[in-house]
Length: 241
Ligand code: SF4
Ligand code: SF4
Image 1: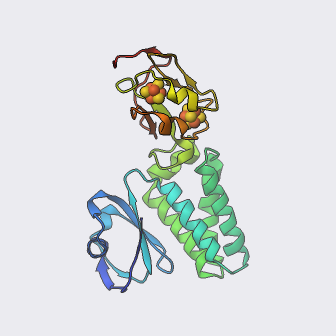
Image 2: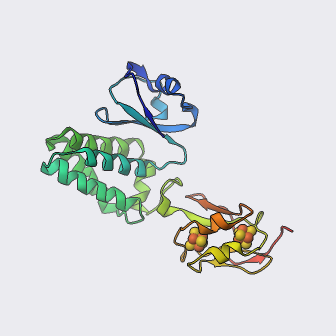
Image 3: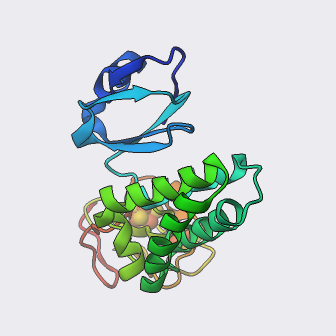
C-alpha cells in the first residue's frame, strides 16, 4: 500500500512514521521509501533512526513477494528516468527484464549472477540518480531478501504467494459440494469432477483466469503460493451434504 508523506519529518524511525500514517507496523514485512531516498527497510529495522527524504512510502505484508516488489520499483524508477546513459538506461532495461522473467517463472541461476555483476557497475557508472537508485535498491534487496528472491532464479519458485505466475488453484475437500459450477466456468478444461464429487484442478492446464474462484458459491476454490493445501489427485465423493 502506498502512503504519501505530506510533511517530510526528517530524522525519525520507520515505526514512528508508520504510526503517524495510520499503518499497522506489526503486520508488515518491509517498507520502500520512494526516490530520491530509494531504499528498502525490513521490519527488523523499523526502530532504527533514519532521515526521511522520500515523498511517499510503500508497505509490504507477509504475503507480498520481495522479488516482485523489487521488479516493481525498478520499473517505476526506469519510467521516471529521462537519462539515456548506458548504465542507467540500458542497465535499467536489463535489470527490469531479468526481474520480470524471474517473477513469471522464467528465471535462471545465471540471471542472478548477471544482476549481481550488473548492479555494482550501474551504481558506479550510471550518470543519472535513478540509474544508481535502481542498482542500489537491487543490491540492497538481494542482501535483505535473499531467501525470497534467490529461489525465483535457482528453483523457479516463489516462497510467498506474491507472484501471480506461481499461484496455483485448489479445491478444498471440506467445502466442495460437487455442484459443478467451477467446471462449467473453466474454459481451459482444467477442472475434473462430476456431480457430488469433490472437483480437482489440473495445474498443467490451468491458465490462472480466476473464473472458478468467482463461480464457486461455497468458497471452496482457493489460491496458494509455496504452501499448498492437501487435495486429492482425482475427484472423490463429497463429504459435504
Ligand atoms: S483458474 Fe481458470 S483455468 Fe484455472 S482451473 Fe480455475 S477456471 Fe480453470
Ligand atoms: S469447487 Fe465450488 S463450484 Fe466447484 S464443484 Fe465444488 S462447490 Fe461447486
